[in-house]
Length: 530
Image (cartoon, rainbow, N blue to C red):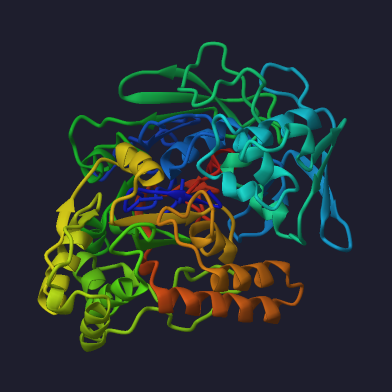
């Protein structure tokens, strides 16, 4: 998605709408001192609590949960390490011309899929064209918009041959509309993974005859578990961990209970449990902070009344104490100051959250024709978690005299509704696919972008992000991004709500489990300490 949605995830990720998913592992003895973990038992297996993917098709997924699984099965040309440095993966290297309009990726020699068939540049081009297939576009098709001919092909007015993606043996050439030196970072995202020719759009997980390009292949699927085995033909060599058990069902127990019982090597946990576990003598040392390059934000449907009127959006923006409602909902979430989360290179430290000014909000509402809230139409705030919507409802009622309806939906139908018929007000979390401001600005709010669920259009914003994207001087780019964020602050198509780390219990002993903040752990990097 240059980011992934997560039902908070629905972060990240931004495929993101709730808490950003993360993976981590380890091994130690159980709290009673007996060996319970895989490492202690002398095996090379690990067990993780992770929900089942909605699809394993990289081109069809828009949520971080699905991406966290598919990223183990299919590999892209580049990858990020825990320090957010871009590294070669299927590509051994790449060249960028002086103008930044052309990038040539050079694939490694001898690459194959898991079944031994050769993996070539043609497979890369075919996989990437699936993102902009006009008959079945990816939720993150916007990530390809800088490639020549991509937008026309996506819109049905061009052909695949017109798209600036070309293969010549092990070389893949990408022709861009404008300088985009960050494109090698963009293609590190799970959406750009290379898939076999016969992968069906929206494919569900089926181990029989599975062919992948990643470090693991699925070998068994039950109602409660997905079992992964390492791919012996993986480009970097067989992964140190031979078998990974991904559990989707732990019998109604809490993750803390299942971890304490020794049935999980890793368990993501919530803020409440983290607040007391940090003081627990046995569990405290196994508590991990999971960094998250993500933002939870509120959006308006700007394409229809009443929020197509900037004055109505400004009224809501100034009437609500956004920092207070974030603090009420979580003891660890950090109130947001902009759409771009901390940790993103080039992020400004300026505060772009709309100022709390109920009087200004009431004046804006009256100017829009709804003095004291009189005559304001019924609108619904759909929020998967409900906590934010209820708090906003209370403050809007008190300050503006408007009573909004609130509704909750499960993530999958919620995600589909956002794309097809967005509610008047909604919330999302977005996890970075690559660490750049544009992943949170142009991708989420640019005119015509597939992830612009509020359908906002702003020439001022588009001009600023285009200038930032084309800038070769980091200072010039930063100033342009600042102007873009000032437009968002002024026109309020979206309100940044919070940032915040995730939490996990991870047994002592697993190496390589560090997170880079983008919600996906590379299982191929894990190894038990001996």
